Amino acid sequence: MKCPEYLQAFEDWLLDHNRAEKTIRNATGDMVRVMKTRKIGSRGDLLLWLRDRRRDGALNVTMNHYIRSINLYCEFRGWEKFPYAPERKDLKVKLVSDEEREKIFASFSGYTGKRDRAIAALIFACGLRIGEVWNLTFSSLDGDILHVIGKGQKKRDVYFPPEARAALKDYLSVRLPTDPNYLFTVQNGRMKYDYIRQRVPRIAGKAGVKFNNHKARHTFATGLLRDGVSIYSVSKLLGHADVSTTAVYAHLDQSEAIEEEKRKSKRRFFLMEAEI
Image 1 (cartoon, rainbow, N blue to C red):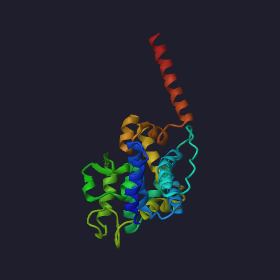
Image 2 (cartoon, one colour):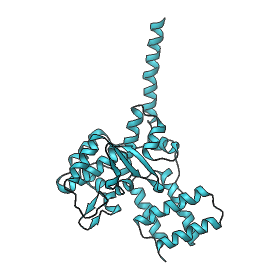
Image 3 (cartoon, helix red, strand yellow):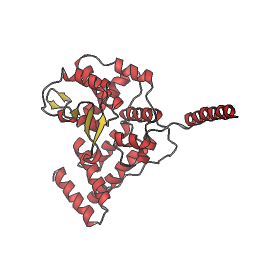
């Protein structure tokens, strides 16, 4: 039985077991994403997919979102469920420093370098997930706006800044025309998801930078928050259904928050003295 047939049977099973509409939507949407990137014939295949997400830098809260859907699928197939990861509310998000980012971008060279630079620019400057970069087509491009297809096939628009547009334009000048729609290609057609997922971390590793793709999204989101963009706007740009997810992905660490409050408190004190 092929995966799409299993998915239809899975959806029917969820309906028969009176699962909530949101649960059915999330579970089937997540399993579509899983099966797009890996053939699932056993529980072991699901384990490998989860390990890939962990290597990508997914936080425990994100891993548990996937595990909830995968465990429903395991129940449907009669497989053993996966344990959930412990969620820490005080988790400090790791960011990419300016120096590390410069090292990564300085390491791109040649034809593949132009392509990899464009991929890196999209995740750093637009905050895109790797799957969203992989799904970009020529119809996604609309001046300084990118039309993005995110998790659950949800569509959103994000700002496409000049530096990212320049990097993509440079890549498109040497792009292999082996697929008429998708932006990122190799000699035999559209670039595979796993290949695009591994490119920037591999280049970063050669440059001596410990990097995963989620770090770039963390850095993008945290930079917006530090610049005064509201958490609700950042949530929309990242494609988060729940603003609480944004609070986990992008937050000022506790020591920085204390220092910021100290500066504000000192300024308030001087203002009060001036008024007296």
